[in-house]
Amino acid sequence: MRKWLCLLCLLPYGAGAQGEAPFQPLAFLAGRCWQGFLADGKQADRHCFSWVYDGKFLRDEHVVRKPGNADYRGETLYFWDPSKQQIQYLYIENQGGFSLGTMSTDKNDLVFAPTSHVASGATQTYRSRWQRSGDDAYEVITEFQSKDGWVPRFRVHMQALTEK
Image: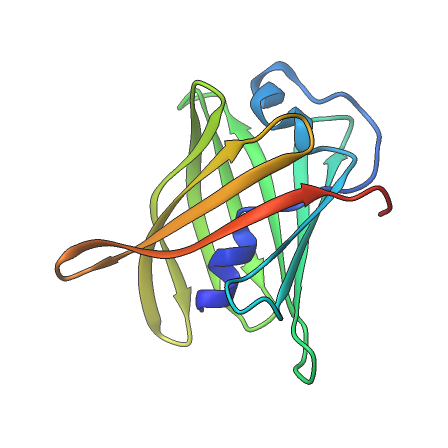
């Protein structure tokens, strides 16, 4: 469950449409792949973002690779909810877990409001913030909720890749 949270905050891939106006805060991700390493330095988290249906949705396909282990895979689909005037997302992963959440902006940051990841009958509440670092990098900061409040879980520096 922890691995998917690390991956949730990333994902670039395939060019295509420019994306509709509500997606402009996410547009820098589209058509590119991004990669970062988890704290142990062995697990590579790669996200590839692509526009879907002429820019009406943004897809983030991610994989976490650790030598000697099976890949952890997930996919996020971002969509605009006109009734709530906000970007929402559905995240699913290869171990059967999922999340449904919202994203907003704070200056240049992408802010993922607290939501729950559900997997194998367990629920974990988390929140995340992606801080842009120029045109080709961003920091993913994710916290989990505990009985004592919010606890930092991981920070990953995501760098744009030149290849897909």
